[in-house]
Image (cartoon, rainbow, N blue to C red; front, side, top):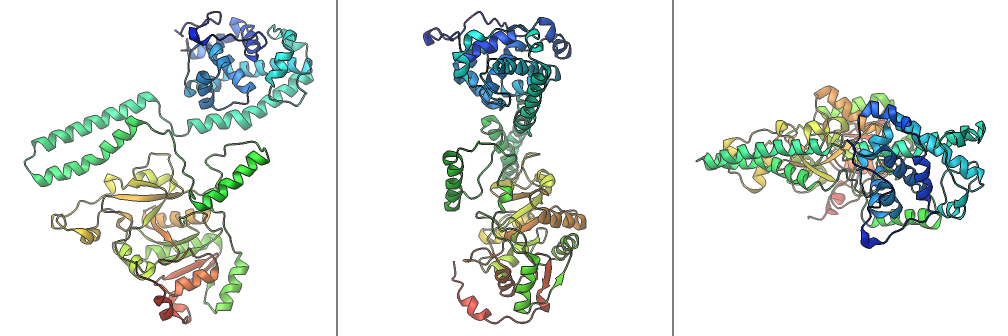
Length: 533
């Protein structure tokens, strides 16, 4: 049975001394919804049973929110505690954004909402408060014309004329498609309800309790140590779930001086030019691939001037070729499309290698990056496979290499007895997982997930690598050497390629092999410019 709901009972705090004015927009929304006959809700009741909240109340808060250009379920939920008129319409109840979204997604309520919108809008036009193309409602104009409003359900709609009704329905349909549905989809993405969250926490509690008991009963120091290590991840996950800090998180990938320039541009766009704010999902940064790019004609011209030896491949072929070389243990320098904006190489100015190779971390550090062998490298994984290899929730992404996760327990390898007492840098030589080149000593990794929509070439390379090897993970490190910025142009890429132990260079659709290139002068002088860390 839904909670008692009576609009004639004021349940606002007594010390608030609030009175909703007779000409307030909330009064008109209330009168409109109260004019709906009970039988209009029959189909809704048959489908859902008796709901937790009265459908009239839900309709009122939705219409009032829409009249203020608020479409997000979360923002509507917030208004129920911030807006006096919304508190009055809800009579103190506070349905969650999920409840609000479920209600307005019901097909019976969708039609009622549409009818309410048409009727309200039709009378506003009739009284010349808004024009025939207006969508949103100016509350002050309604207040000034309050004496003109009275509602009799449906009969008042019929007298407004077919063209006005059809135009109102068209505008409402556009509103649903462009504002309401995107808001609901954004809030429904990869969420779980409170009951499911509790079940997960309970299972973690049980698993941790078993391990606690094993630790207490064991006489072996080494066994207790292993169990504590195994217990670490479940405890971390339990802590995060219990704290429930975020439903989702997005981190601006250039949160430094470069990000300041972006912030200044956005401020001018919204505050000076008064443009409307719209959320673009999953984000409007387009993979942060916002820098300079070079056409294949420009690339060919640069390579010809250098005297480089190359082969040109079509787009479908070159991804397969790159994946083949990576699977053979080759190091590939890759320059393609727009350069990355921000501190991370995200595939377009990257050095790529096989994460399964046990020697790759040391080789990349010493022979390519010209730095200490212990420096860690980051993985790139196909978006759909990330949760299978790393402790990132299913459906979540890390497109900008800014989230640290752990390698999944079933992808880890047990440390041999002879290696357990190693110390310091010696620990780095231990093969800890199926992807050792990106696995740190604590099994953590700074993950990048890649989507076909954001970077089709890079996605295709890893997908082809997966077809060859069964592994959707490769090493991705910035295309540069220690102390230098990322390569930007074909000339930069060729110089880095020739002065390091990179085996293969791909620039656009052109592929170059190191052993086919003519010598490039200046290598010894170049090495002298690299200062030790």
